[in-house]
Length: 392
Image 1 (cartoon, rainbow, N blue to C red):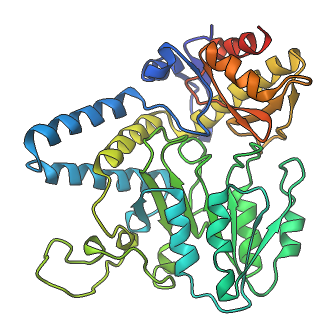
Image 2 (cartoon, rainbow, N blue to C red):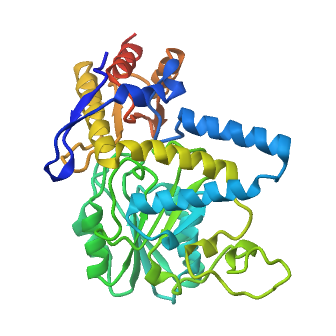
């Protein structure tokens, strides 16, 4: 069993504090049964989010829209929380239904010209490939740069870029390998070549630190249903304010205009911020739940969360190595994440995944290999249950 607290040194030389990870675990009902290691797929809801959903359902079913203004204020609070997490202005955050939606805002809204190109990685998640490939009929080329064992070679990215590269679009953390990119270096690379940086942040946002003022990302999108512990269909889109008028607004609706609640005034006077992308009615219950999850995560802080996650995945790698597993994830310092990909030589990964499920251990099988993705509430007991399930 893990110790209920871990010593943690804050940045700036502050006195070390004790982080009660067992308290976090008590906020995760899933831990009562499962050794849950699939946060890179769909995360379980923490208790505060679960309670918020139940309150909303009870209110909506018994009172209709009588308390709609309160729901709306709770949704607006999510924008405030997200802006603080990223170090940006609230006017730079749009609340969206998916990472894909945020990517398409840029892919479809950018003022492309025939001969322009986009540079990305060949092993990006499909959501960060298809929207760009869909621009081929406008004369825009998508250049897909291969990786080596998931490791990103910045020199190869640089070589793929030229004076017609408009956007470099890369995942913060690779879903398939667990490699975490240095976002500062990606931003410098893009801007040195006169391009903009789009960051698919779904596999890191919420548990790894990013200040978009210090690290000048141009666009970012992430659904909340992975590391942010929210429900599916509630996510975030960040748009650096200087690019607002560069993109053609998409998904425009009643909510996109300055006078959103004056339904008799028909004037296309778009909001002067990223909320212009929130065209129609919002997923209120999803956003309210996401807000509760973000408040829980922010109570620990991204620095502490990321350290804990790396600590637990390091432990998992050691235990897996002891049973003869082959670790496919490159764990170079600075590039570790919550994702570890591995296989057991001579064993069928799909069958092993079923075997783990039958022992209440949840993980994924991707491209014939096993993938675990641990959050900060996972502990040594969970890792032990994984090893026992694999070796039984």
